[in-house]
Amino acid sequence: MTGHRIFTMSFASIYPHYVAKVERKGHTVVELHQVITWLTGYDDAGLQRVLDDETDMATFFERAPRMNPHATLITGVICGHRVEDIDDPLMQKIRYLDKLVDEVARGKKMSSILREPARSTG
Image (tube, rainbow, N blue to C red):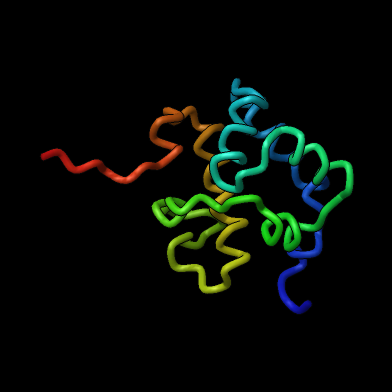
């Protein structure tokens, strides 16, 4: 596979950085898992399996039980790039997760982080 180095890094090597980021800002692993589950469909057991197996990032997203169809509602800048403008689908998914982790760390309301489209009334 050609591409960015992060594609071949294990999720287990990146996960502690996510944990540290949210905890440093006074948030919890439970909140972190909530956004990971929302984005990828992994439950706690599936997430633990990925961590134990040291699954690489490409495989982590490739085998995600169910990517959230509302992930495209994630917008904004992460690592100097607008997530909605990232061309590589895998890199975009990685940056979606980075953006969600940032939002948890910043204390954004979970209802805002877990984007749902506006419901029409009528």
